[in-house]
Length: 389
Image (tube, rainbow, N blue to C red; front, side, top):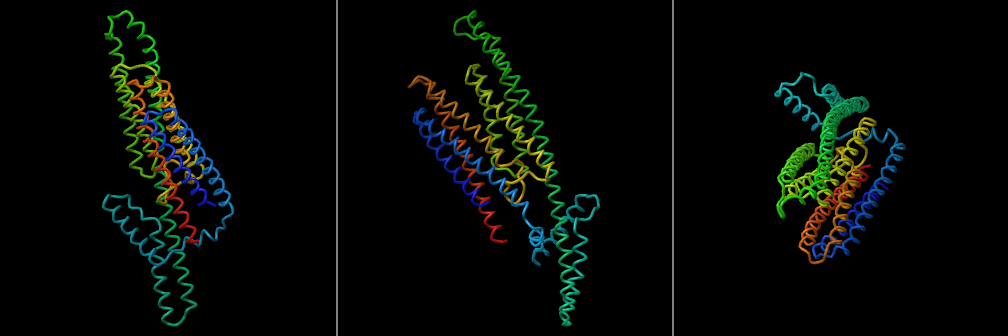
């Protein structure tokens, strides 16, 4: 069932996080070879979640095709308390609109609320005069008007939310595409510089870096710091939109990677490590762009982004897309661990990279636990919805 699928996915996410925690501990103790097993296990468990969520999405689609419209209509009728709150919300919305100098358009559904009120009064009068049949008809009319008002308000709010999300998706896609173009250019310049510097350094005084190399590194550092700033701006936009849990953290990971690359350039490093970090930035940006394009296609196609919400609304980006990016981050940690494993035991460089990789592993573990909590929350919401049916 729907809840079972998410429960299973949450369990797999917790298991993946535990495997990551074990890998992090072994990295901290400088046992990279042993930690690789835990990392491979974590990647497999992330793949399991992906499969569970995809199967669940298919199941939900099949079930939606079978749902009778009467059942959906039944859910639309609310209690008198809900009606009161709806009327108050509308009044508050109109007052706020008036204060902010709105366009004079009435709140969607307000007219239906106004029509419902006299019908409710008439129904109460008929009951007092012992005419329950007539009262029943008037109550039904009032209920229909209120249901229509509620639906109109919900539709208007959903439309606004969807329009906002579409704007955010477009803005992020444009920003990440521009960032990817700039990063690829910086990555290319880094590779060229690294090839040339050996020749230049061989001709210069021993132990002294030529000015051409230091200046080129400084320009690359400035470019990467500029991209870091753009990534932080993008993250802020996602946080303000507010419907995604893991997505902003993944963008923060990109920002951190960009900052780390820039700092390496300030130390005049152009070798394998900095180039691997640049490649990882490119891969994550490509994944982000792909996810954003897919979300826009989904929203254009059916008015929402599919399953995997939370907090009662459609998220900016789906869980399956967040999961793919999480897996990419874990693969990056795995690659760093393999690099540590190849280094000479006891060396200062190995120790530093092992410590840095352990911290990165801890970060991915935290994101995985966050994903697990999100899945658990969705499972609880599904159980609650099931109880109300």
